[in-house]
Length: 361
Image (cartoon, rainbow, N blue to C red; front, side, top):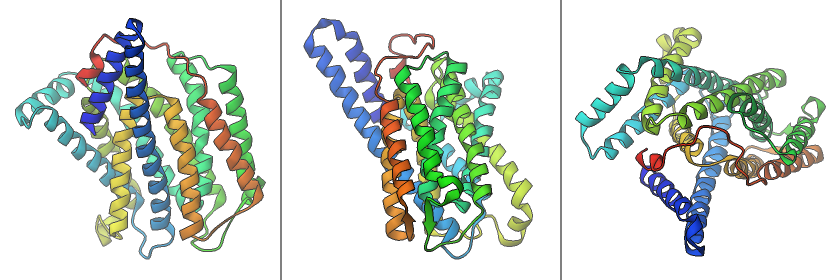
């Protein structure tokens, strides 16, 4: 994954430098860009849809219910493990070089570590809220409603990154909002269940609202830190996951410590739960790659495709029944996501990076 990212970033940078030298350079740039975006689209779509459906299944259908706080902590540990493996590979297996780099950027830069505590803590809150949301809402309703993170992220991008959105993008935001209202069916009647555990609709929706804001804020804040400095993507991830592990463990102590002491830390874990952990950790790492190298068009396509896949999976395996309001609302949401990604102009006003920086990540 790391090699593919570096190669795609290098090809994109080379294509940019040759943009004025003729059609050959332009074609090269566009070809690399399309291939990389399609690759990102496929991975994001599969991970998002699979993670949503499997998490919902393990929280409502399977027998013994595991503790969501411990799953969040284990996922953060897995992210750290995979990130350290990538760093070790980039340094050709030299533990000494990895240690020196981490020491210089973590111990030697305490203020940078402090900055990274913000998104990691917010992400930990978001992860716990998504567990609560999925425990009380079906996967399809969760997936569509969670797309409210797009207007939330748009507003925060304007305020925090100085971006300007086109009129088409703002129209897409309102279309998206209308679609989500239809999906909710004014009381949740757009979606009914034929199997599984029923939960509290209000609790699920409230938790999801908190998760949406956390997702938007943490994502924009992390993007600002990531693109505003020359620090390696993987070093940034180590900084963030260090705080993420601490905040996630605090969540275990505050909410489930007594249960953990009585039944064990991994109580209720099955192969499917471990698969949820794997998808969550892989998705978290891949999200940082997407933030670094791609744009909202890619995220929009992935989100739209994930809605379709998770809905089909819920109908096939979890007895979900959808009404016409859900179908209409979901169609508006998908249309809005595509509409939001139509403008191809760069609306980002972050400081320009030095030439070749992307290749050093």
